[in-house]
Each structure stands twice: as C-alpha cells, then as structure tokens.
View 1 (tube, helix red, strand yellow):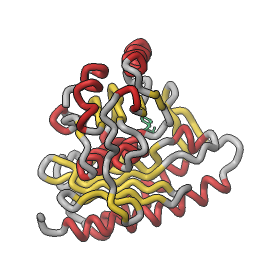
View 2 (cartoon, rainbow, N blue to C red; view 1 turned 90 degrees about the horizontal axis):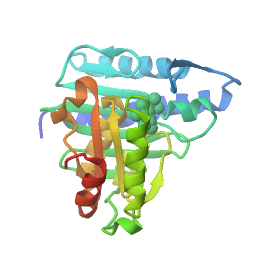
View 3 (cartoon, protein in one colour; view 1 turned 90 degrees about the vertical axis):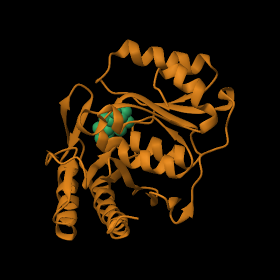
Length: 261
Ligand code: IPD
C-alpha cells in the first residue's frame, strides 16, 4: 500500500462526517427558496460552496502537497495525488427539501480512485472503501447483490441535460424492455453506494462528472462489482459514461447501455 493512504482514508471519513453535520444542519434550517440555477436543471445552493470550502481547507491543512478538484471551485490541474469532491451530490433533492443527498470524497493515485467515501448525513450512513481493503457501511463489510437475472434486477439510470433527452429515454426503454425495474433518485454517488451495498443491482449514466462518481467507483469495485473504465475514457477531466453492476448482469446491461465493461 502506497505511503499515506491509510492516513488519507481516515481523513476522508472524518472530513465527510464533519461536513455532513454542516449539511444536515443547513438542510434543517434552510428557507423557502435557497437555490439558484447554474443551468438547465442544474441546481446550486450556498451550502455547496460553503461545504466545498470547508473540505478543501481541511484537506489542504492535512496534506498540503495534494491536488484538489471540487464541483464548485474547479481544478488545480492535477491528475494524480488528487482529491475529487462533490460537497452535495443530489443538490436538486437538497434544494427541493428531499432528504436524499450525500457528500462524496475520492482520492486518485496511480490513475485510479483508491479511496472512496460517501456519507449520507440524513441516514447517518458512511460508505467507505480503500483499495485492497474492501468496502464498508458504518464499518460492516459490503458486497454487491447476487442478482444475475435481469428480470429481477433494480437498475438506476442517472440523468442530466449533458446528453440528449432521446438518448436517455432510449436507455430507459432498453433497460425496462429487458425486464429490469427502473430508478432515478437524483444522486449518482448514492446510486453507486447502493450498488456496492446490494440495494440496487446497477447504476448507469450516459455522462457523469468525476466528482459525482469516483468515490462510487472505488466502492463498487471493492464490493466485488463490475465497473466501466471511467478514468480510461478521460472521465477525470471531462466526465464519461458509467456502468456499475453485479458481475453477472454485466453482459446484458452493457448491451442495453452501449457502455463497455
Ligand atoms: C448530479 C446527480 C445526478 C446525476 C447527475 C449529476 P449534483 O449531481 O448526481 O443524480 O444524474 O449526472 O450531475 O448536481 O447533484 O451534484
């Protein structure tokens, strides 16, 4: 294990918990309309910026030589030895008063996410993975589900305006025609965490950004799932498609989504 990874893992869990407490408090006390639109169906709250600043400062204090990429404040241009953070994933849910969102923290080294921490402050659920050491939920080991029949599968198809609407509808239609049950819950990071936990059998999205998905990639891999090559497709710089699922569902969902595993 490269030096400093365990320290970084501990720091990621601790920062996620601290930031999660702030998010929970802001959610409980928020006013009626506390969001702006960054773009079409792209929400921004003041809390996103506040929490990202808090997380970036904590990481810079502990690991001053590391890079940092955040959803709200962009990138320092680093591609390795870099933290990739979404302060609130599921911002539209947060903004509309729906308690399904999380903070997502990944650390990339050697070209892959080797640490993935996703904390759901409303349910006090800490999903955490360290490469080679497995994935856990509040300390208990995680494993992807054993579902192998697509007609028994639950699949979340994430959506954003970054891809044409007809492409999303066609993806959903193919997944449903194969017999799967369809979800779209508004947090890609929690969708990935739920695949790692066996609550969902797959998460797929035609384009997703690195801060939304990299922690989830580490989690699903460490929980024994199959995951498409997000980093190999330039996902860190510009986002990429993602498919994560139980190994047995891989061939069917790869056909349905057009995303190679
Ligand atoms: C979005 C959510 C959504 C996913 C989008 C993301 P945000 O992130 O994860 O579920 O489908 O691709 O952009 O805006 O809530 O941080």
